[in-house]
Length: 362
Image (cartoon, rainbow, N blue to C red; front, side, top):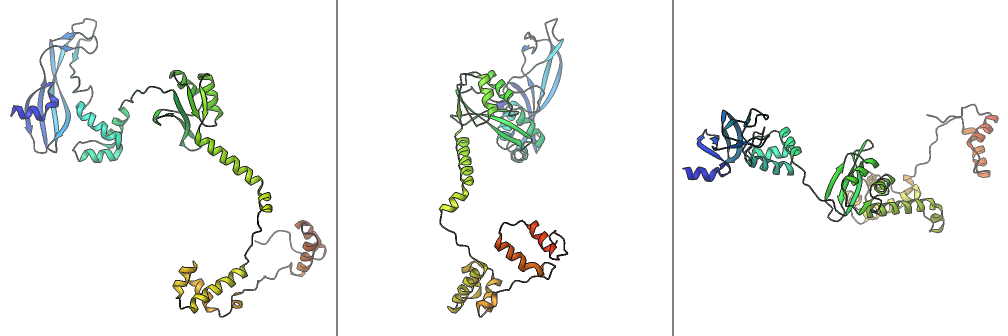
């Protein structure tokens, strides 16, 4: 039995396991710290004089799909140094961390899961292990994971990104060779990047966009560094410049190119009528006609009902208004002088007797 307990709870080898209690849905391990001298966490002196005992309850890795609770009796010892604290609580390095309710190995497992999933996703996965954890605790564990220390490479790339578009931006510092993220700065100001470059020496090449802010920060912090234009921003700027040049010479392209044939509504109607009736004469159904021609079914029905194309022509309908007596005069003036201002035409027909206003009808 002792051998089996030692194998199952091998992670608790730093403790003296007294008993394991099976409570059905969970296992309770009662243990105590090993006898011997303990080191004071403040002065580093050893002591074996016990002042009192305390109990800590922590969670450990589950066994056989059941929660494992470890209840440890911890000693409080008297510090031998007179100028230090009177008493101190012994620690178990590698097993129990201060102020934690989980063992170190359980915390490591939780960290590996929240690093990948975070929040509610990590909670759902941990609940199946089973490990009891709330989403708020999962986020706190994620934020408490220490960031790995990475050496600053010779070639870095800096670029801004939007935390909240048009309101808040940050700066990402990336290894230009491996494309790994090195650091994230709180904003995109010149002073922030300059401070980071001064605190992280060794940068020889900086890849950046066309921002003058970054250029000034690099020039002040690392004057000898080579500034290289980012490939994406270089192509993006070139494409934008080409687009502006082409747009500025739009009339030249239109005059040099072939004349575009504009289809009138009457021409389109005639072509559609012939296409519909050609398919109908070959025995194609209305629904199939609509699919082949890319028209709505009701549109095909309307063309099919018309025996002649002239039946689909709709003469323009003008509502009677005060301008009707003066339309011939307006057309004649447009023919004689196409660029005549509308206000001049208004004054002319007013002199001829027009009593309406110059505002367009609502």
